[in-house]
Length: 315
View 1 (cartoon, rainbow, N blue to C red):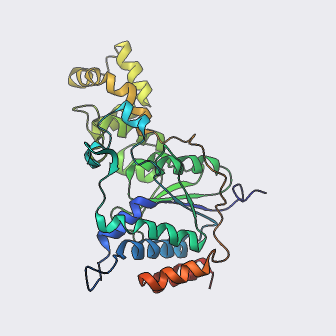
View 2: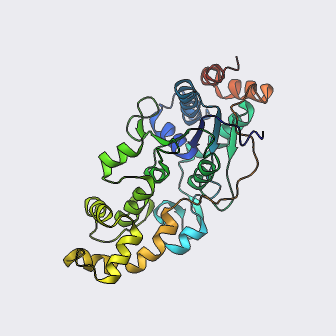
View 3: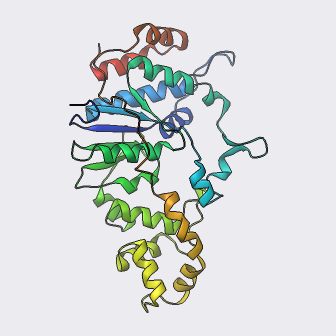
């Protein structure tokens, strides 16, 4: 059996979401500005150790943004993540990242490589798309835990397929929300992951530059979806003159028609992203002990590295 299709629990890390959280949440312990910053690396490795300890995955993948603002999404909605561009005039493809974080990302990559933890990114796609494609590929092989602080990935929640989101935005990895369909129903009034994607399309998301339908908030979107089932059902009812859509809601949906024609392609993760054939099983030995030792010494990472090694059972 291929290591990509071995049954077991799959854990997918939304890597940028986690290392950004680590950077802003873990104290910078440098005694001098001349020292290299390491708080994001330390925090990221500690998160992996905690997650592996608590959830015992059989497969583990650090999913990567090879393209944080893919062209196909920008072409559909030009405002998509536009507010995060570092400098529109010199490099419209560069994300605004704090300098002290940017220098730590190569160290994180090296640490993952040395530990033997799979890292997967696909050119032209975001980590969200990689996560979606890996989730679909793993269907029928075991549970999937998606670790992220990004609500966009709620669309992949599927109780029947044992896909849940370990949502870190409020409590971090130590006190994360386990997002299943009951959570979506209670928190957002929608019954499934795909319904959440429809709700997000209608509502919009200012953090991603997604405008939504002006005047249609979360509660109205949930009510519409409860009545008509899906975004397509709402659009069909609107086009047919269904009397249940009336007044200001009808006017707002009609004004948002052009947006609703293109937004789903932006909101939905690209589950058909072309995945490389990379083994995803949790490592059974340190892949590069020399590199790992050098990183631990050069960056003062001995403690977090040892915690990951212990959690993975490599010690």
